[in-house]
Length: 69
Image 1 (cartoon, rainbow, N blue to C red):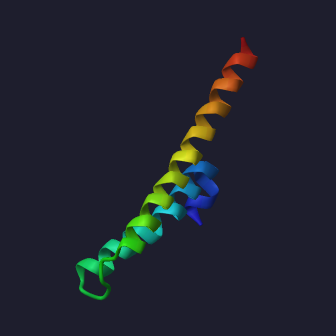
Image 2: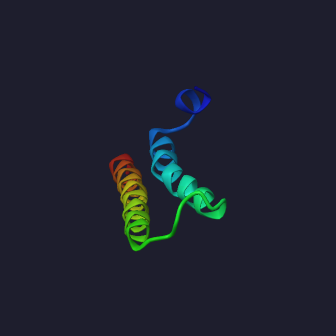
């Protein structure tokens, strides 16, 4: 609840993207899951999603700066 009230939506969405990666790493480290190339592909896709969120946030910020001038 704290994050939803006090953080920007971009930060919350990045956290939501990264949570499965952290869960996968912990489960592999604890021996509850096995490493596979499907997991590597899924991780790459998740980081691509985070990159897109960051990129869109930068574009919005730059557009607001241009409109202010």
